[in-house]
Amino acid sequence: MRGVGREVCSTGQTGRAVTRGAGARLAREIWKDRELAERLEKDAADLKRRFNRDFWVEDGEYFALALGPDGETTSARSGLCRARR
Image 1 (cartoon, rainbow, N blue to C red):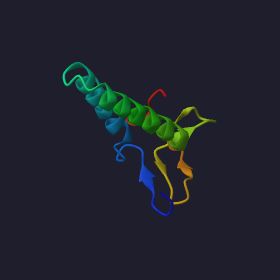
Image 2: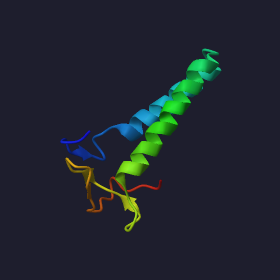
Image 3: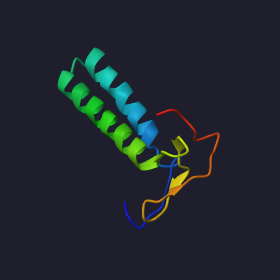
Image 4: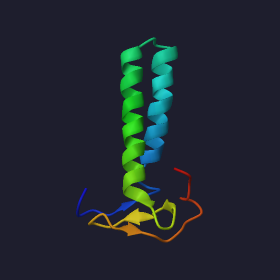
């Protein structure tokens, strides 16, 4: 997503990962659709991996607030956005 800045809290990536995780559980336990559940779990895991890769600030050990147009991190800390990987 070059050329467009992304904010960590407004991307919704974490929310989508959680939703996909919940959807996987629903697919597996209620709908008995193992294939869908596995696909949703894989998607959620991939989303988490990409989020961690893109937003994690190694030297500060926290999530960046945002990414600039070229993928550079904004390293200001935010209590709202800080979380464990």
